[in-house]
Structure formats: structure tokens, C-alpha cells
Length: 167
Image (cartoon, rainbow, N blue to C red; front, side):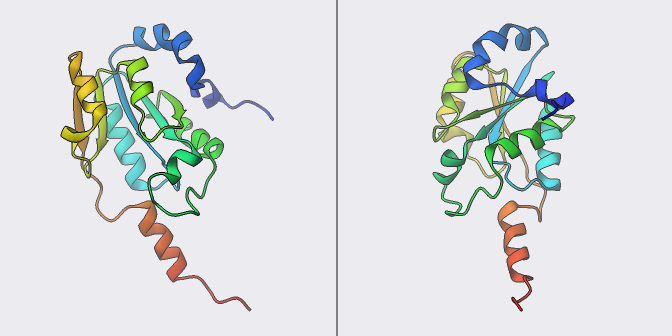
């Protein structure tokens, strides 16, 4: 398989310590995470707005098993981690993509120590352990409001509703 231009934006979590000096030299780091299963306008708007908060946007994706811990259904994610990573890495607003297998990205956040932690508007930042850690060293944590009418779950439900009967 030919390597794409965005391949260099994909960071194996085990290599993060090696890459960290280079990443930090680029400027303020914004960090967000999620499943990003079926990419839609809401996702790309969110990631673009997040990227505008600093110089470097690092996105950590839930692995397939980690995504299942979120209770979105046994059939989710629809796209494999490899596919989701490549789609996110191809976005202009994203500087780097990595992944985590735990319930939260706290261990990656401890390693990266971003200047700003960003989550979607449905999160209560005050109760997240990630927020407490980022604020402990002077970082900031904030939410970005959702673009109304866009969600992967809603998109899947719409597809299933309009599914044609088998002939």
C-alpha cells in the first residue's frame, strides 16, 4: 500500500514520547478525543473550531474495544480504528492522530500535557478526570457546542429507517 501524505500525522501511542519534543516546538497544543465513527459536518466543524484554539490539534481516537465501552451498541463502531484514523488524519484541521484503548484518554493527556483540552458541548467538564489533570498544571479545558442536527447515531437511525426491504 502506498503511504499517503497524511500518514505522517498518525502517531502510534508508544511513539508519542519520541515525537513530543517536535510537537511541543510547534506551539500551543489543543487535545480532543472521540470515536469519530461516521464522519459528518458536525465532526468537521467541531475539529476545525478546536484547531483554531491553538497551533497544534492532537486527536485521540477510541480503539474499537474502547468505543464499545461507551454503550453506543454492539455493532459500533461501524468503521475500524484504522479506517477512522486515516479519515481524521486526512482533515486539514488535524495536526496529529493517535489512539487509546482505555475508557478515557487520561494517560495520553498525562503524556502530552496539552495547553487546552476540548470536548463536545454535551460534556460536563467539571467532572472529567482529564479536566482536573489539565488544570493542575495550568492548562485550560473547554467545550465547543454541537452543530444542531448532526450526530452519528442520528445518521445511522435515518439510514435504518429508510432501508429498503430485501427482495
